[in-house]
Length: 248
Image 1: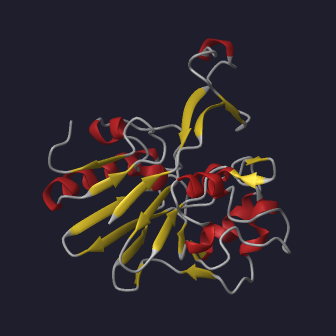
Image 2: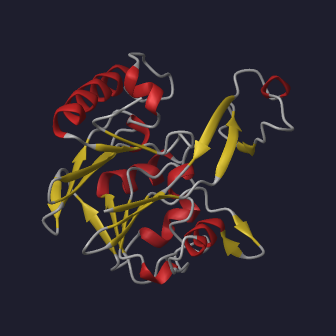
């Protein structure tokens, strides 16, 4: 399987949940509001023998009318129309900003030939919650759309993609395992977002259940070592993916 990270850059986020671009060569974190955190945004493409998979969709930023995600794909030789499945860990706006081309129920999906996989309860929760973490207007295109596969709990699709509701970062968050032959790729979304978080035990304040997220990371790290997983890290542009054995 081929893995392609699609970095959208680095941002800061504060209590307002607003993401502001950050360039380490010209910006200072101390100049941002107190409590600001650095966040790196990085969807992935995984090319298998059956599919061109997109894992989460980034922020939905546009330049000259073109989605940055589409541009990143084309820069890597992939036409957006070639994407066959979009796997969504959850629907926070930094992970689901580019599910559609625009806002509202009439908006076209960003990937016209793809099936989108999202937990039904996560979609309902996004509209029920209506907080700064979600952008409901951008998610309208997922409702009642025949291209959207609404999942209810754990399961498997096409015999090689497994999904599991983990519910630690957000109540209906899900993780994915993609397996072909002896290769296993693991995508834990915001419950396994960075290499350093896998190596160290700590409870993150931004998780709905920080203790559960910490224990999941520990469990996954141990299983990954035994089974030789490749981990994909959505918020770590320095270490997009790491494969056991031979970890730094």
